[in-house]
Image (cartoon, rainbow, N blue to C red; front, side, top):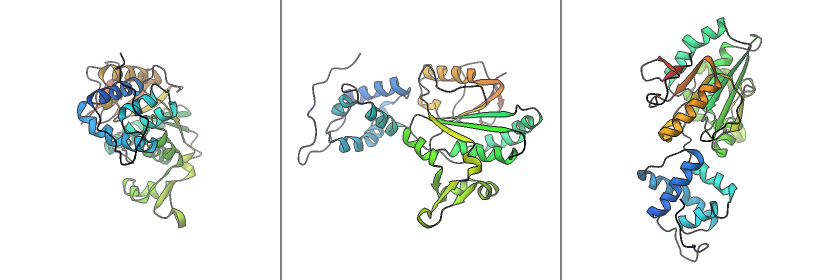
Length: 292
């Protein structure tokens, strides 16, 4: 059911400021964001929503969140709807985040792949943000499977945010992020910027060629993603979904994995009370699951 609101005034007059969001306006955005991407905004997130959307209101010359909502919904401004979803998406990420999971891959999974792995190894980073995660995987796998090893690597990075994906595709980051990357990988796979690019680093062609990016909304019933995959990273994504959305996402990821494939979640996420289709194979809060 859609809440009925009076028609707002169009935009700014001299000296006007954005009006404080009302509980009714916040409820409208809660419902819209839940429907679109499955993200549940608790009441305590009201200030976060205001902070992230206020710039869009100023850009469009709007003084109320009601007017912005009508712009997106009543006028069906699809481009602005994407802008709104970009604003509410959380894009915090790091290279080699949760390092014990990467250690698990290096010590247990990769040796098994070296003994018995198909020619093409497919990896999916679901919720890849600005690309640090899929490029961390690219560095790890290119190190263990160099050109000429007889193995091909394909890494897919997906996210809901078009802005994050644009940055991921550029594969350029501030140089201060280099400290997150092991020195041997940094020397082999990152290029330091000079001149106009001073203070930045860029992924080398050897790993850029392994990764491609695509916009995917995990809250949709079907994903434009072709499986199967041997490994799926879906870390720090489920925490934003309600229980029903989590179950639906996990069921889909399960179907996209090969038998014996691995699913890695964030350390604060688990599959308890969601599914029994996976087995937990690595403890210490590292949340590594395997499809039997």
